[in-house]
Every structure is written in structure tokens, then in C-alpha cells.
Length: 111
Image (cartoon, rainbow, N blue to C red; front, side, top):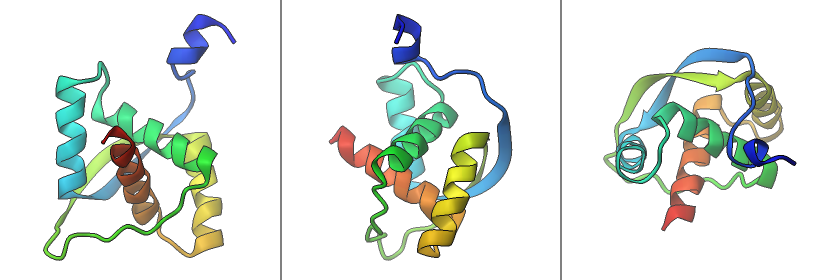
């Protein structure tokens, strides 16, 4: 593995989707994208999805009672989207829910 492969994602076809993200999760992503990482929220979401797929960590999290979801546009890596479709079929969870789980897991690993 060369140096660039360790730190950067390779180019891939992207699938544009409008996804409902829990507001608190999106706010946390925005904070770390702004203050900690040299990455867009979209890239952070893609990395969170890749990590969820690699680890197969599909744990339903307890969403705060009055949490609202907001729709955001994302460009999701095609290979990741195909893998999420398999997870959707396996676990009976929507793509939106899987993406929220991926973000939640990634943010939890930050703390």
C-alpha cells in the first residue's frame, strides 16, 4: 500500500441521494469537519459508511426522543451504496437508517 492509498479514497462513481440525517448527528459532523479534519461533511459520511461496512457494526442506537431529521444531499460512493443495499435486505433497515447508524458509530469512535 502506497502513502496516498493510506490516507485518500480512490476515485469512484458517486450516486447522488437526498438522505434524512438526525439533526444532532449532522451538527456534530459539521463541527468536526470545520474544526478537526480537512474534509467535507460528504467525505466524512462516506468514510463512516465504509467503516460500518468493513466492521459490520449495525447496532441500532437510541435516538433522542425529540430528535428531528433533516434532508441533505450526499454523493455516496457507488460500491458503498451497493453494500448498503445488501445490508438493507439482510437487516430490514432503510438506507437512511443505515447511514445514520454509520454516522453515529463514527462519531462515537471520536469520543
